[in-house]
Length: 538
Image (cartoon, rainbow, N blue to C red):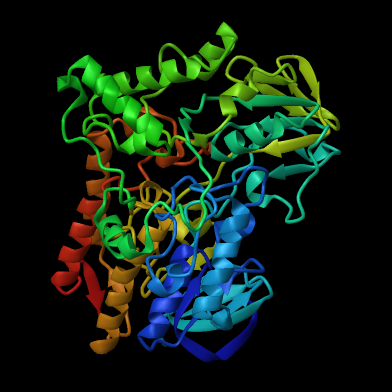
């Protein structure tokens, strides 16, 4: 590794990333007396909410689930919306910083580009983009699952003369879309949000869709100090429930009955109640067999389809946006939340292009060619998603004891122990990464529950004089086999989703995330109780 080495200080723990997980690690480890520091590539805290500022960007977990359970933070904080937007999330992180004084132990503008384990000192040497090197005993990457944007290799993309931005790299000072001819490529979460915001203000909006989004009604509502969803005197109990809930959201609890066993009228009543509650209630709060049984899943899809089609005037649009026959089982791709997404397509200034039928051929200086038609644009928006789960880690030159990178080690499939540790990479404990629940887990809940497990692990190592801890190959292989068994018993492999790594050409197709939070934490806690079984400690 090349750089100007700063031999001192050598921190006990170096955390990467100032999102929910990274900030929680910094706070908790400081409380426990560790000499801990955090590197953040951006100019402020917030993780994805520092970078997300595209039109319509907002969270898809309703409050108060999407916040820390730390009383010193929530006791004098109120939300203005059930699903806050990016501006309010930034205000929340500023409030958090004021309460916990986190920034004093954060180096901003420090993008980590490499890390190498030094066996002689049992430390990580971490290189940043400014060519400096810092050292720490333990390295804790908290990069999130969407740290690396995916931009398709469209011919001529670099020729486009107008503003062209991926939603994950949106300019902090914004882009003027009013009265403009706008092209949006992609209809995932950020695409849905941009489209419903842009349709009413653009002179023309063309949406390039590969797969219709099974978007759910957000059921947004405004809040004030007197209408917070959970009163302060009930929040402690609410957060305790959240910590042990299936998806890290306290009030989404599935009906234990199977959809296939319920009378059709009662089944529809359960579906309707979940739909009216909004958010992810329809995804995770109906029947227990929706994600496992194809017949039950089809019942949920039919209900969703009919709800959407009733909002669309054109029969062709109905079939494109909510097909009679599902392209993939309901919920096997992460549903997005929407407010006016489907109504936008009823507007005369909005055009939907199905790239399965008319693929994008090239990008020109002035627009996009698809199906021999040249669409002219002033602004091009790439809502094309992320190299999820692994991309944030593999884009960094992380080298372990064998000299290979993490990208090399995972070339034939992801292999971790608990989604936290990787064989050959000692003293590295990652949070919200591949093979942990991540994509199926509310971010702040995961930051605390999985984060406390990692903090307890580091305390155990310190108290027992352990200076080197590494996952064993056998433990990692067993965990990877566990993930494969979960995939085989679910409907998830039937969709070409980023859950499966299938959205990035050439990426190995495998289930990247553990979908069962309670089972996951039960296994993690059992391993800790056995003295961290599956880890070699020295």
